[in-house]
Each structure stands twice: as structure tokens, then as C-alpha cells.
Length: 632
Image (cartoon, rainbow, N blue to C red; front, top):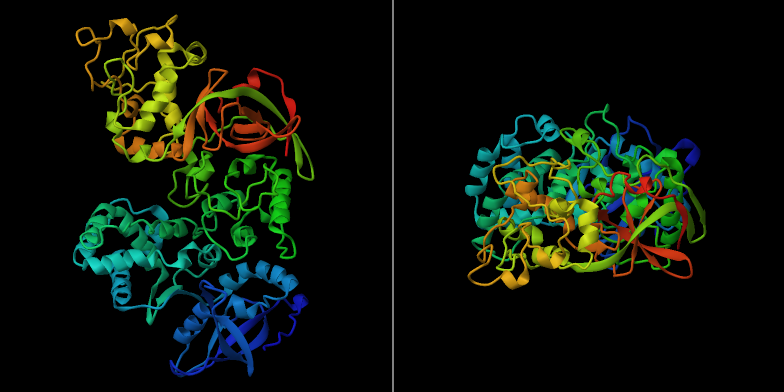
């Protein structure tokens, strides 16, 4: 078996792999040499997925046997030239994976390795006839855009939509489907590829599938082309493959939005990167963090270093503590999600090893492009500030964190978990039945709105928001009080369809329908109903000055969550794991309110972030003094 010689750290050494020439069926023969990492080196860095670690094949390295995964074996076989030696950097071979100390140090060099590489070559995997046709489509779509760098930086809008459409309509359905399938290859979901391709020479990077290669930028353009023609592309695929979903192209858009072609742009923060790429995968759970360090602009301030000798629980907890100290913010706690892989983690530490599953409410979490990228409207984004401009007051010891904050409510009632509301007929939202209760096409919308109308806490809700503003508060809660541009909808819509609401002060919930009119239950019959069944009392999207499409997009923030009424009269959106009796609190230095559950004695567990209407801009801090909350 191959024996590694140690690297000299003082010389910034790395290993390079010399892949000797050969025919397709020849054995793979290589040698490894040590070099000092410098810009003048001429080598290609490979970006690939390891694949199943249990299925391996042998190659020869310096006359010694080294077993590699079948996916890497296939990549080397396709990358090999029949005439000349190729110089490569391949992580599984050039880093001694059995030496955890070396691995920790070499991970820090990967930023420079992929930056200095003359080119980065992506290996998607073997190809068949349809895959080769799909790679041809990528070339054709990429050729449409005259200046890929400029277009990717500024955004495509509808500039090339017609030209893209002609390419799709001229292709066979099986070819378009194969194109969609290329974006479903495992490579796109691997966390390390984000750094590898973001740091690569964008003009020189190429993607290989089987024997076919195409420019990396053409793949990014193709992702936007599918996006701009998504409905048509979906119809083309559905003609033969009705069960196929055309959605994986978003992985390409996510990669495009991570590029940093303008050095004057501020880099991403580590927390933003963790949010954006939480759904990516890695063999080692710690790599969900380490794989993004090379792109982070604040990693030195935070002070986190790769340590493969530590457990994931230790790494994630250490990251949380250092992040609070460096950023003077508790916002990392907003990333807590369930279920968790590591149950021994303190509830206040996010488990970065698991997928996000349910999108967050925090603005950075909701927006896939992060804080700043060329062409982003981020400068207009209106972020939440539940704790105002306060800074954390925390003390952490082991699994216990003591933090200053304010309890301001207890969950009194909960709606069902939203699973489909964003995809339903939102134009029916606001429709009333004969009793003046919600009768839209959405069971979730109906249950949530009627939860307010039938609530025994109606007086508290009306007192909190003003009777005439309860419907407005409800609609704003559905979208987290942000439109699809992440801006607060105007306070007054000013449209012709504005709802005229009578002053209902003094009325109880049983006397109120969704039009805002007073209706005594005994007055409601076929002859005296204020509204005939199916009439529309108000329009949520018009009330918030949104288009139907914009409202449907914005309401996705409620997906996977529950509507809640608090004993304080507040209403909000909470994690689906929340139960009646859970508390809601604002911690100093935290952007979002948190749902907490009494754990043992006076300690609480974190259930997750939440949106609470009229508690997102420091209002709670104006009402009560802070106290020390114990979280475990």
C-alpha cells in the first residue's frame, strides 16, 4: 500500500499528482511530488465527489498500490491523456486522509490551491448518448451570451429569454430532460465544490461529463436559461416524463451567486455561507463548516481553525461561542433547526450537519444570494431587529448559556403546519362564507384566519393591533411583513380594492367576520347574510400592494411552520415543533424572537426562531426590563 512522506509545513508544501499517459483500458499509473505552493505552478485542480467509500479500485502511485473510490478512478481514466503526463491536484490523493493533523492544515491551503490552479476541471461522471446531447445544449445556450461575466454579474432579466427559448424548443424532450438531470448529479450538492469553483479562474474552468467538456460559465448561463424559461422547459420534459421535476437548476444559480468577480465587493460572512449552503452534503459532518472557510471574510476574526481530531459537537459549539465573541451577535442561534443528528448538542447550538429542511425567517437565511453580490438589491433589504441595536449579554459554561432577554408571551393556540399554501390559489384568499368566516381554496389559510376570528383572545389581539388592523396584521404575518424584494410592504396599499373596515371596538370574535363587519350569529341565514357564500371580502395581496406572483413567493416563508396566537395578543409564525405553552422571548443581540420551552427547573431549550408581528423592531425592549434566561 502507498506510504506518504510528510509535508514540510515551513515550506508551504503541497503534493501534486502526475497522471501518466495511457489508453482507456490501461492501468492507471501516477507519481506524487512535493512542491512549494506558489502562483507559478502549472496544474489542474480536480473538483469531484468521492462517491461510495466502500467501492474502491486500485491505482499505482510511484509503484505502490493506492485504493481510490470508483468515482475518482473513473475521473482519472477520463482525464488521462494518451500522449502526455497531466499534473493534477486531487484531494483524496494529495492529502494524506489518514493523518488528521495534516488534513487540518492542508484544508487551510485549499483556498490558495484552487486560486493558483491554472484551471479547475469538474467531473460530473460518466455519460450516455442523452448526456452528450445535453452537454451540446449547454454549449449552445452558453454561446448565446456575448459577455458571460457581465451578464452573470448584472443578472439576465429577460434579455436573452427568446434566444434561450428557441434552443429549448429545438431540442428533443429526452435531451432537455437529460439537461435537467445534469444538475441533479451528486457533484452539485457537495459542500466543497462551492469553494473550489468560486475561487477558480472562471474563464478557464471546465465541466467534464464522460468525454465531453464545456466551459463552466456556460453551465451557469444554462441554469439561468432554464430559470427564465422554466414553465416551457417543464412542459417539454413533461410530454414524455410527466413525473420529472425541473428544479435542480437552482443549484447552478446558487453557485453563480457565490462568485466574487469584483475584488471591491465585501466577502460573505461565515454565517451567510452556512445559511446559503446548508443543504449541501459532506462525508465528514465537520466539513459543512470547514468547506466554506476559504470564502468567509470574517473567518480570521472568528478564529476558527480546522480540527479533524474534534467531534462535530465540539466543533459546532466552539464555532457558536467564537462567533458570538467576534460578531457581538447572537444571530447564529436563529439557525437552530429540527430534527438534529447530534442530540447531545446544546439546544442553542445549530447542528450544521443536517439539511435546513424548512427555510428560515431571518433575511440572510431566506435569501439565497447572501448579503452582497453583483446585481443584488441587498442595499434595499430591510432586516429584522427584534432586539434593536443591543449587543449580547451572555455567559457560557459547558452546555449552559445564560443570556439577557425578555419573555413577552406564551403560545395560547396553534394552527396546522403549512405544507402547500404558497402553491394554492391565493386569489381566493379572503373569500367569506355565509357566516363571514374564511372560505378560500386553502384549508391552511382558512384554519389560520378563523383561529383569530374564533379566538377567546380576540380582545387582546384587537387591543394589540387595533380592531380595524387585525386583518392587515394577519396578512403581514403570513409573509413575515416582507415582500419578495425583502422590503416591508407599504402601510397603506392605496389601491382601488382597499378594504373598508368598520370600527369594531367593543365587539367580540363571535360577532366578527373577515370583512370587518359586525354579524350576530342569529342574523346569519339565507335571507339576511351580509355576504353570499363565496364572495370576496378582502384581498391579501392587494392589501399589501403585491402582485399575485409576488404574494405567492413571499408566503413561502410560512412553509413548514405554524400560525400562533400568544397570550399577550401577539400573532406570529413559529416552528412546527412548537406546542401550546411554549414561551416567546427576545434575547439581547439577536435579530429574531425565539420560541423557548421549559426544560428543567428554570432552564429552557431553544425550539427555534419565529416571526411575531409588531415585535420585530425592538418594540419588546421598550416595554419591560431584561432578565437572565438560562438555556441548555
